[in-house]
Image 1: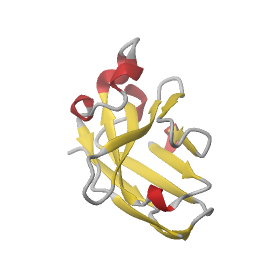
Image 2 (image 1 turned 135 degrees about the vertical axis):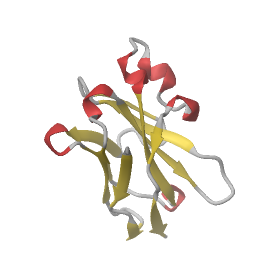
Image 3 (image 1 turned 90 degrees about the vertical axis):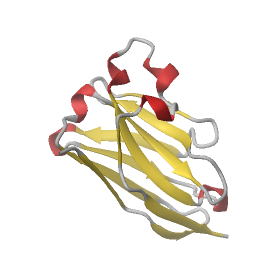
Image 4 (image 1 turned 180 degrees about the vertical axis):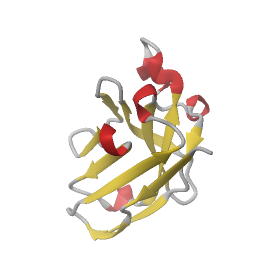
Length: 130
């Protein structure tokens, strides 16, 4: 059984940092692209960062580029999202997903498409206070 488990969420003041983890069991991230999505109350789930684990290439949504960094530790089969300079508008439930589209040459075209992901975690709450 494949499981993705997010952790590391919490309450932080604006300007602070958090590091989220997405640990996998039942699959090896090497063959996947792993994306981070978030969903704020009343809003749709949106993609914010993605990594093609096989070569470490990354892709970011404009609002987080320069503040968030996605990385992987293949030995631990874990993907991270380092979030710096957090803003109240970053408040959301954060999810990680894994998709085999990472094998495609034009993988970035699928990076933020929910339908391209095969597995999802349960989410972790991030709350940023003003």
